[in-house]
Length: 212
Image (cartoon, rainbow, N blue to C red):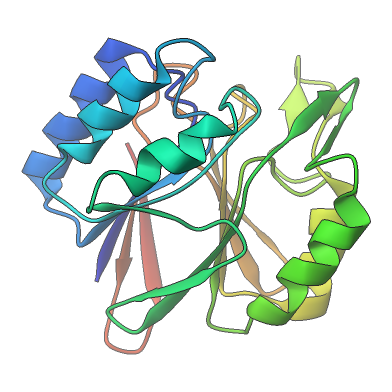
């Protein structure tokens, strides 16, 4: 099982071309986009281009994706919204949550974040891939190399539910991978010329990560 994960496309044509090139080159089983597919304007054009990718695509919205992006994704048979849903690909459960309110030095998923986390939590199991736009607080979330800007409720959720992998973006300055407890956290932001990450899973579910 090979997962290609990206975030923070922001509707940029060069990033969409890079994604397509990597899909053709590495032939992933699924493409995961952890938010900010678009940048407020022309969302229909961007979603249509992503809908032409020759691979199943799982996505959540970020802070630059308008609410109508959800219905635009529904028009394309190869794109599935992960918002508060579990979708299995080759036996792997992917679970997602859309949204992010960027606040000074801290991110929230939404104004009613506590209620949203309560709806998300029962969907997450030990073998889940959790997809959210912001990283958990203190993990791959530094802005200007100094200030943490992740989401505290996501951090607490990860400690409680211990998903196998968490895929995020939002903080352009810190793409990479690390661990939070027993969860592998991957910031796959394309925001600073990155190209996302490849996640290769063996038969036992052990992950090998390559940052592109």
